[in-house]
Length: 632
Image (cartoon, rainbow, N blue to C red; front, side, top):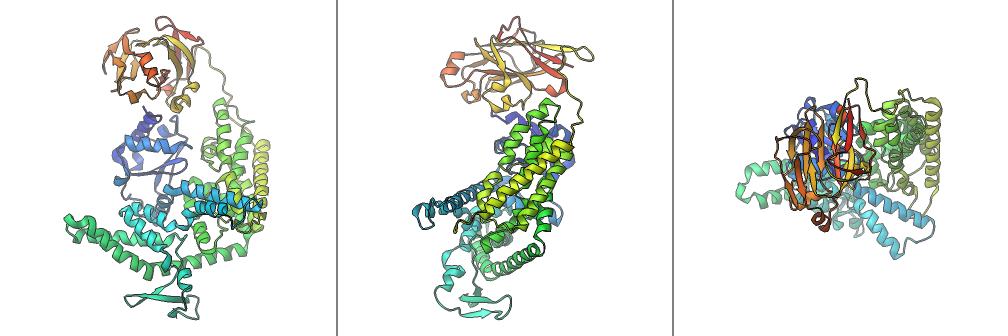
């Protein structure tokens, strides 16, 4: 069984089943579903599911927040729902703004990891230059700069591929469109280096444009499309319209070759003749307008953007700002659009750190440390959804820290030279990697301190946890009922948190214990019914007459043995008595094959019980020892 297979199955079930899913993508921490009918999703079930942080609805997306391991859950959900990249077609997002957010997030999310990596490498290189460890003429600099800069320089290619997927165009056609946009000999820099222009269109106006070549007699306005974003997106969208027409006109037997032929032959020339120049004019105006807004009141802009940034992230609306920063870097070589947001994640992280000293619920307290580590790296969703937002005031205090640090950075005129890094890894992006000028990075560090002091201080002194303190449960409950689970194996017992499989160790599947068997025999832990015998016979599910559901999973990753060394003695639906033989397995052979035989015993419906108490024994006999006590 994959680490997140059961979790994925439950997610698919509770979003309304695979037939309710139009499409699925993921970002750093979230599964982003497009559902046919969101009312069919079980919001509360998902929110309270082990392994799910929370659920959000925004931008036409049904977002299930998972955490940093979301890529692995995503793969399992795709498998559980029978989805693939090829059948992720257009979704029915309504509203112009929702559609815009959907398109932008769908295009940028797939290469966000590469973008972050490139930004971190460029930031690291800027640090090297600032410390005079390398010069900008050395081979080391040239190679590292190429590694970090490649994703940014060839951005139209990356965008062409993901936009093609979004608009249902062949992705290699999208690649070809993006590559044509950055083809060296048609860039303005290259054309300007070979002589005077043939003529200048709109001479003397804001839109003056040199023409160095013609295409079938039509003037081609020269532009630099390297590092650009929007032209490639629009050209691929235009190509999708041509593709639809071509598929209707061209006989199916020759479509594989002639549809791409006509799509490329029409879309790229029109892209270079009309779409590219128009979009370049508009993006230049947008960048100028943004700079004028910043010039009008940097402090006010930084204050508002820094304060509201986390709200924008919650609703997925930050995608309306990120492309502006990418456009700025592509057109000007630097950006100011996102500078004011830098301190927000640190304010959030510090607020959550302060909560550690005030929280009464041990389970909530245990979430703080991983949330702080994640937050310092720039991923704040676990902190927001798991801790500060439900408590309200800490979230508001973090917004104050983000606002003040944002106003400081904007007022000091800090410039961002690269994109990609998050959290502490974003600091080097404020260093000019050509000159090594590092004052922006110093201001960024001051902003970190400022944001964290404000977030921590306000939360520590002005927030109190109103949760009733949770007491340790006793062996009886308000109604005095409990159910006993006997040991299904002989062996030694240890905490479930020590399991080698993260899904079990984190409790995502439910509470339980880990048994290290001394013999290869599993017996029924109570009277009940077998509800599941996995085809590979390495795991079995059984429910008691009172409704307690137990999963016995023999070994870790033993599903890969495909049933070898396992022998089930019961079938699905069979009634069993305590002590009846369920499964036998060849312990030594499994271990010799390189697999652990440690066996998680999990109460899969843990949430139906007040608590699950574990045995205090370290050595078990399946005939005589109590393993778990379920309190109701």
